[in-house]
Length: 248
Image (tube, rainbow, N blue to C red; front, side, top):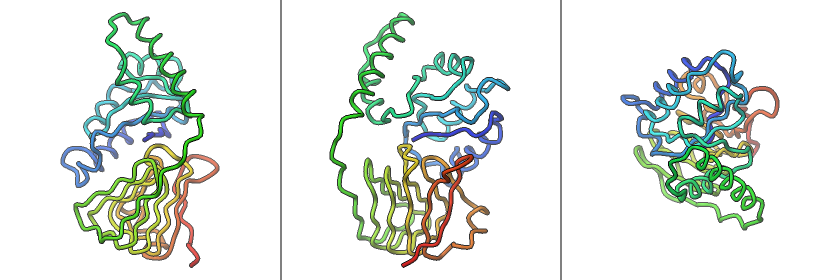
């Protein structure tokens, strides 16, 4: 999963994350030690200085595990690296990075660690350009009740029955819902910005694509709530969720 920072002023971002997913929030167990890469592309980087240490602690409080960073300026990159984060190219696969980093030998010398990490990144980038068959979509034909959670890892999620409020559905790919889609809905969970969400009755309490989300009053004001709709990320300007009618 990728957290795309759209402002260098992190207080509001951290406050919103804590309110949504921090200890004591209604969705405090939404994440389960999930890996996250922090993207500083639109954060203004070094001006003003970014309190990365507080951001990392907020992510950990929300049961997210910061693993790497990308698109950072010199000062931000140096601070992030000092906190143990790995510099990640845009095309790097989250799952393969986790596998490689977990296999790193224990090295005490700072320079040696950096050299090992560089070699790991080179190796992973070479691997991800290989063509591999996509896994089949995960199909769920049973009603999902409050408290149930489904995660389609590395593939699409197809829902043939209703998803109740309080349930959670997550897919690394697209989500197709042929019944009422309520609860918490996340597509492109591994950072896939091309993921889509399709539903015959779009009525979520939280919805996200590649870490860009809407919830609460933002959703209640949506004219497509409860209707056939599709959701994607915008193609121009800052990333935002775009709701469009689904013609059936």
